[in-house]
Image 1 (cartoon, one colour):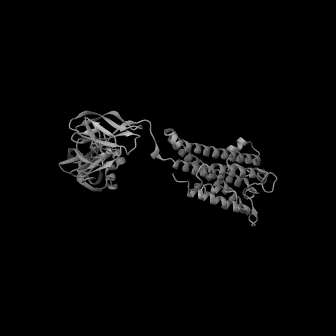
Image 2 (cartoon, helix red, strand yellow; image 1 turned 180 degrees about the vertical axis):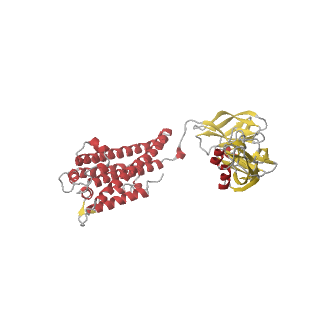
Image 3 (cartoon, helix red, strand yellow; image 1 turned 90 degrees about the horizontal axis):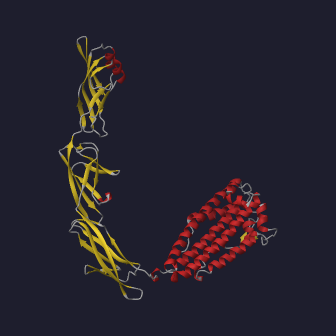
Length: 518
């Protein structure tokens, strides 16, 4: 693994901290002080992420130590020391952070641990925190600042000794305490004065959290360097076991069965001798591939032995047994609503082939189109006599035909015209006037979600011995038609003729509605 490198986010946080510290020295506004709260929150989140990533490295490190403690042990012991040194210093800094908050805010340590920086009323004050860090001294030597500096320098000295001297130069540069440092007027300062003298509490807390981030960075660099020193090629395993990995345990008749046979945890430079039924299977890079043609259906079992050299150089035999199932290819193509395809509409169907994942099924159709929709398929065909669906199994390596199925193509049935919820017969005058529209309906046994639209019709009535006709566009009754119905007497007849409806395959002429006014 490579050494730790700061992410753009971490670089941005560090730069913001420096800018905010400089602005603070110029007695800036409340908005700048509140910006410290935002930076501090970002640093705390970064510290949590750093800790999680380092713990992942420790987990991998410990696993390798369990596998081969003789080789990994010395490196693992140093990694444990690095973790202890880092945790100790972080615990010390955390205690300082909560103690200065407690003194500035006048609350207990437990309350300080649970109070966010944004809720601390004295975050813009520096008198209590300066006294805490300097202890009455001018240079901070008698306060917590001087004590913290010594702890940091001792930590760096101790943790850097865990890695080779050639790797130390690039580690821990973010925690330098040497300076030089200068105030706003150019006067030289030491590390304690620069970071804690007349610095508000919000900046103190943010700086302490930044120190924790720097500690995690050094810890990550040290542990990554130790982990990269482990050579996987030197591992020695005291247990071996045969391993058979078939490409599939389900094989179709006429196809081939293929499996990888190996001994787990062996050096790939050593090729095992694999025998199945007295026949030796060629091996390369520690793996033998066994291939058998599936000529008989049903469960097929084969047995063999693997001969490899043990740690002592002597050959050892390991027996194995494996099985697979051979079956005849089968295909199921079932319409989900009807046993035919209707022309010019979406026909949902399901396609499945036993033992084959849906993602490896590729259907085609002789006429029209077929497309994937959700967990099923949708077929759309033009008017004709027959459509054939053929299915191919494609596993990315080979392609084989699974079979086909034929479907008759039928024209979508005509809808029936209704007005006032009837297709003819006696109708109350008031119901006719209230309905005012012709509605097409599909037959009750037609399960598809399909609708037609009325485009034109002819209104026919008899008044004073004369035949009255009114043309209609769309499905609504015109004002003339409604007036005719209003003046109609009981028993008079009205006809709605030449009703044309528009569907997916064009216009259809629907039946006449014959009405007797009541």
